[in-house]
Structures are given as C-alpha cells and as structure tokens.
Image (cartoon, rainbow, N blue to C red; front, side, top):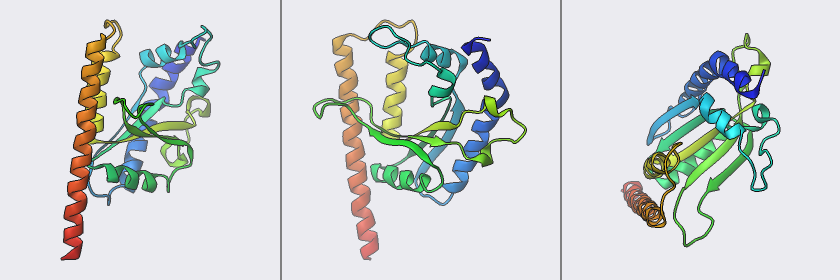
Length: 207
C-alpha cells in the first residue's frame, strides 16, 4: 500500500475523531482565558498531505523519507486571540498541559521585510484525546498548534488563498509588494490595539 493510501486510511479512521477530541481538550483548558476568539482543529486533507509528502529539496531529493512519521501537522490546531500579549499568555498556558517538541515564533527573515507572523508549536498528542480502540499505528504522535491574533490570522488566510492554491500563476513582484504592505498594516494594527489595551488595563488596575 502506498503512502497516499495509508494516509487516506488514517484520515478516514482516526484523524477526524482525534481532532474533535483535541478541540474539546483545548477548549477545556482555556475555558477561563479571556479574549480567546476561537479554537479550531482539523486533519490535514489527503490531497495536501500527498502534496507535502512528495515535496523535494532544492537538489531534487525527497524532503521526507518517511512522511507518515515525519510530517508533524497531520492534525492542526489554531487558537485565535485579540491582542499580541494574549499570544504569549496563551502559549505559556498551553505548554503547561502538553509536552512540546518544538515551539517558536515565525517572523520574516529580515527586519525590513513583512510577511507571515505566528506562534507555532509541535506538541505531543495527550492520551486523553485518543480512543483506546484505535490502531496505534494509525495515530500520529504529535500535532501542530498555531496561536495568532485576529489580524495575523486574517492576513495569513487571505495570503494563502491568493498565493498558494494549486493551479494559480505565481504572484508578480508588484503583487508580492502589495501583500507585504498589507502584512505591515496588520503588524501595525496589532501594535496599536495591544498598546491601547495595555494602557486601559493599567488605568483600570489603578482605579
């Protein structure tokens, strides 16, 4: 059985129920957290998994030798919150409940560039979200969690829709600059809202 068929079996039999249980788990641990806009989980589609599994490096070699074990976002989770400071607060809380394989802030490589911003984690799936009747060989051992502000989420969704759908022509240089401009605006809006919230919180605490 090829990798695509194996993943399809995994997708149809275990990924959906595990993702649903994971969403309930995240909602439970963050139920008292203010300013959480939404929490969502989803299994990676078969088409996207196969596309990623077939990826190659710059020298033409396969990027993944064992994609079913190496691809870490077969289940993806997102937490969307209001302000930048909330991202750090939620990230710290989440890591109290999960063992992290990797945690990092994704930012453009150059300080003069604007593009994708987000807080990403690769976390071990807790036993509580996996039905004991599932074939353990079909259950991935980890999932990817993204924590973003509303502006970061809105920009990344629109950017993905415009630039990464299969069959679309690559964006031209001027179009890429337009996307960078909108990323800069989202970055600026996040700073303004975060600073205003911090000031108003300080006033409330002083009263």
